Image (cartoon, helix red, strand yellow):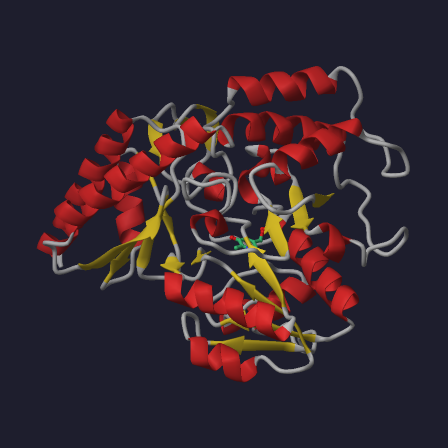
Length: 384
Ligand SMILES: *Cc1c(COP(=O)(O)O)cnc(C)c1O
């Protein structure tokens, strides 16, 4: 009997070691990793620069409380905000915790309560972030939710306008819904959201936990558009596997959190800061990001040209190296078949095959993945 809670549906496979885009299981079989954890190891497994930075810090100092100055946090915050219009960072330990911080900050700054989020959104599993999440299956059995959240259909400007009232503190969105099925927001919708927030004095929170840190070929997904969010949250890719999250905001909005208002014991831990600093130095390099965009276009175009011929595949969508293959049937068998053939992939909901390869994956490796996915879908089509 397993000594663990059964809250995860785990595959019958254990990964033991990895390097770059490849991982090896306990049987010695090697896989090409199109999951990066779940969009976490953006620089690939055991990246030398991150390993070196963390190793150096491991031998220096592991932890100090946030009662002391931290030049490591300062430096990492500067790296994180440099490509944006934002200038303040609060470090924490996960995506849900970053969103909790963002929700609390928005309420405290505006002294208003209502937060509007989208149907099919995912913002985390804690009470605040779960209440923000627009998926009933995430909330089943856990009610009552935190009051004050309203969910509107995604990419629907009219619904958003109708929901936005005088008591609205913030609108919180993902630029590409990740867990909800790799659903990109349209440019016109994002423009509308930005304009509406400005007109009505509503804060714009963008959840970049999955889309941020280079995943879409820009520092953050909002950077593709002319958006000026007040608060941005990040986590998954920030530490390349070392747990770390961040609330990033304007100086003005950050001022609502004075001493004693909000905090976390582990947030901004020196080891996490060493990891995040090393990640940001690599990922926020414009040449690196341009390469991610090119690889993303290659991956999407190749998949479109190879897969859209199959009746089973309805759409290939996403931005950068965050790609969803919308299938007619459930993708769980497809994922197992791919594992059998040495490819690791994810789902996003039951019908979307989700690809989140390391941003460093080579063209040869991408090509192998595309061929294997194509073969697996063809096989499914034949046997269906
Ligand atoms: C994963 C995710 C979260 C939650 O992050 P955790 O670190 O698992 O708490 C929140 N928002 C989005 C968009 C995510 O993809």
